[in-house]
Image 1 (tube, rainbow, N blue to C red):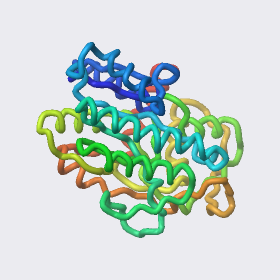
Image 2: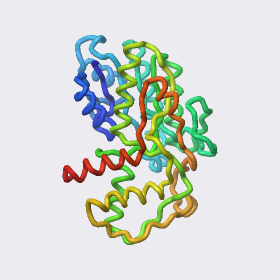
Image 3: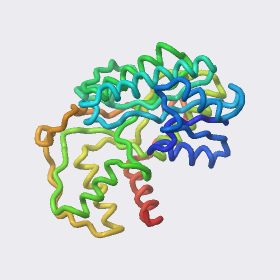
Image 4: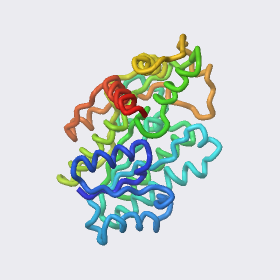
Length: 299
């Protein structure tokens, strides 16, 4: 499998590259500053770097995005340039080269007012700048290039880059008391598991040439940020001492931030499981593996 991974230096991109190599595939990584997805010529050069002809790339996975949710409120032009216009550029480039595109999106496209898990077919209603930019990016891809797979995910954590798990461990070692939101529910997703699922999807659609559309993928199980934090620190505490003595649940209104968050963003992943034959494991099992890996490697 000849794979072009855009955003290869990010949290998800690292795992995509590593797992593709383990499968014996031939991944080519592309990321800033060499590959700017808002620049068509830059994307063309990334494709050329994978080989001398269009046939050198079997599929593209886009793991690049502007993900600074709160900062996006004050930088809307940048957020839309990357998440909407960049998706447009990738879709047009893939269409012109006849390259299937897998694009990673987010639970933030929903408003969080629902009380059952969101299905891929549910109408979107993004609330903040980041959310709107991602929703418009999805729409551009659907309009431009039919051979696409859009995979929405949520609450991503992993070994690489900054994420909630690492932040809570750091704070757990620094503070006596933590106050964490307990009225927002979602599905934590391990970057390593998401990477494997995306590669399974890539193998499937390039072999069967169907299955295009929008899907959801998260680890199994829903939890609040408060519940997630308690589990993170309990497990991390088995490896090193934690200073924190008290973790207090608070409401969203007690932790004001610039961008609105979906209060309920649990995603229904059944169509992804059925179409691509993927069995999801619990977020707790994935978290245990991540921490064992981090502490086992002393990182």
